[in-house]
Length: 192
Image: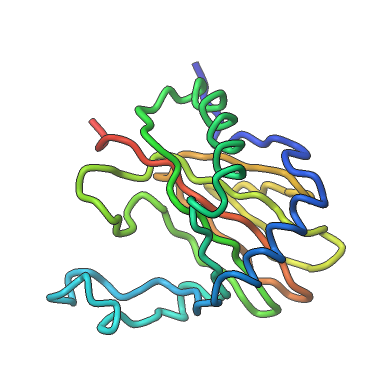
């Protein structure tokens, strides 16, 4: 059986829900410089974020962290939907991690990468599924397309895309305006 690279749920969130997520993220979380933080083998103390450096050649954006406890309703809604989508891949999933609202301004991007290899908060879980929700209209920005395994997703306002975290994906450079997206990850037991 052929399994798709990704699954899109059109109009997953309403325009009002998308605006509320952007506004809430910007009012309750301090923007962090978005980047890939160093290479783990170069650091003796991975728990000390002061020693990590941002790799702006790989990723440029602003990141607003979203706390699961504060946004439980949103996470519960997404988690129920993910459990249905996971019937396609049948991954061993345990929970939905905290997510982020990402702001990509003109010139921002995220070069090809896979989410599964990123450092996690625990040694017993791995990222299994990656989630992106487009939070603003395509008329508000140019460029910034999410591609998965080289295939463009052409997301519209409120669309959700789910894909295995081991797949290579990127956000192409935003050439004009600002793109907002919610991103999150679903964790599970280590791959077998």
